[in-house]
Length: 143
Image (cartoon, rainbow, N blue to C red; front, side, top):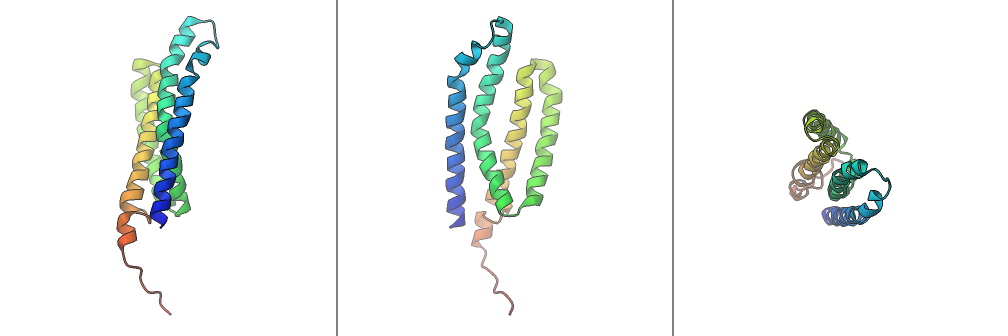
């Protein structure tokens, strides 16, 4: 069914997000050798870790938003993106002044978590592949 295909793709997005994030974490020692300036290396460490963890969310978001495009749910996708953008802008107003560059990456995290929430609502509540939509009987077309 369409729903099992969607769930399988989401599982792949989750798995690939974990793989890519893990790969980024494995490369962290190499990134630390990219400059001799200790302050730059220290400043880059936390954002690199945050970015690696966000890959898990990104894998789910990219697949989920692809499903939204594929089902023609452009209005829902647009609303989700506007909400996520507003959340990101608020986070960028709050976090960077307090914690610097890591705050920028946390702003990206807020953006992607809100996008993931939009994907979740679409897939479980209001989208054409949600359980509710799939349980509705198909109307007989008029002839």
